[in-house]
Length: 160
Image (tube, rainbow, N blue to C red):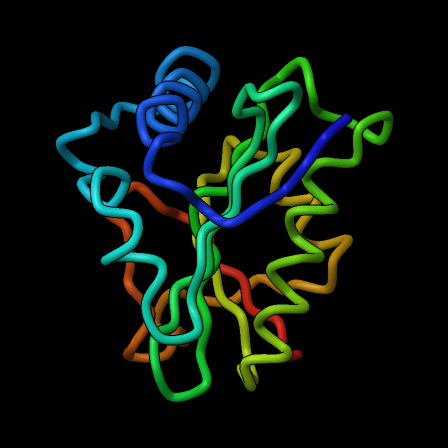
């Protein structure tokens, strides 16, 4: 059974291991934990304002994550959406469940727009975002409060 809950400190190492493994080994993204200090400070980075960080677990194992940054100005940014390879797909529906929880939280929090950045090579993720109503936008059209990550090449927005 898959459970989804807000971040708890005892999950930090498992979250870091999941995300780094997917980034570095599965998708060959040249990024380290030193470039993602947010993962070592989840409460102070993500769980501020109306933001949050959710964790999907299967029998206690961290198998998915998603985060919402409250950027101010009714703008939310989606970050750290990762699902362990063995738990992807419609059979589990983890990505969709994580996204639905985030979107409902954003709507309840009064956000007007959600934004995200990703890499061109992450085509399955891009298709997922498009299926969920996101549209591609140019980097220069992002709101000034959007926190751009250096590795991101494609940016998306959705009014909620």
